[in-house]
Length: 508
Image (cartoon, rainbow, N blue to C red; front, side, top):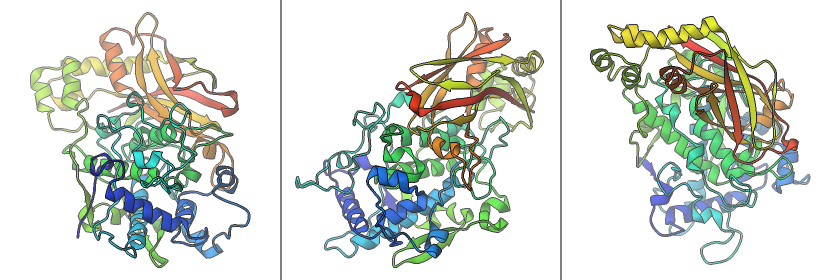
């Protein structure tokens, strides 16, 4: 049987569709288990991440809780892959295992369906960006309390308990990056991330992880360092039942990306296919029903048919600017642009710093501004490549530069911080470069056995912004101005800072 994951807002049955009611019953059964039970709800959250002080602050842990034995902790806990090219396959396995445990729990209940599958939350569809009602009420549908899908520590984008995903704060630009693995080094991290080993909190997040994944975590969880939202922080996100519907949507988008005719597909590198265990690091392992261990590799996670499930909607994401459309915009002839139709752009191999800010930047209050000084010679290389596109005789000779804005060494204590970034030059309108969420920043800031405390690196492609500035004669400048506008004012206690803002070109 192929299980079908369906859109939570289109299940039918009012605020409590049968699929959600069975999910709640399964979650409730898992929540009854002790922390050290590998098939329990909190144990599963600990697989994603565990911080005893944070869990205690949130009310999910006490010093009397029996913690997992050393063997179980070593095999399963603190395993989630972030800032890694394993982000997508690791989470796919995590969802499959959680789903199997929910099925095992409800299978023991009268009237349970034999085809139950985890739903997904597609917040991009019109009028479906609000938290599904069953997750927003403390009560079961009969009016009695203790709804296991409700988490009190879920505060929303304005920190007022109104949980929704603002549509102007999320995007699907990552779907237009046709390579899974990016070169990094200031250039694209790719759709799926830069090459890493086992990375329980890596520094540079991939395209789909940066947007919409990180954004949605912080927007839904909300909170502050002293009053954190569970969804906002990697070490507590798995405690919130909405986490798994959010990740089912990210998993769905991966499959949509794979089916794009321009997609270059998943990595074929042995280190990716076989996973970190192939280089002597931790294996990916989940406790299945009956506490049976299941080990898997990224290569095991690439074919939905073999995994026994699919989605009810795998239609292409809203169209982004395609390579041939970019050539048209830059002035290429109809023949050249037409020949580029259906062809993915050639990946640039030359990565070069165009410019950078002179000092670190503190993010506080409702707005922060910074200046990025440009190297004239390198900036002119970008301009030359854009001009060449208009004169090219063939698509392969057109290939204009791509441009990326980097936030380097981002540190702080508030993972729920979200802000928009605007770029401008003197005397010209500003352009939205993108929106950023700092999911994972507190972990990346605190030195421990896995992290040096250097913070996160966030990469936004601003190719379309630079193209527009070029066409409006606004890129021929010595510096660009960057404005950082938080969705809500950043308190001093958040201690958010950016080590450097830099701009890189990727050319042939």
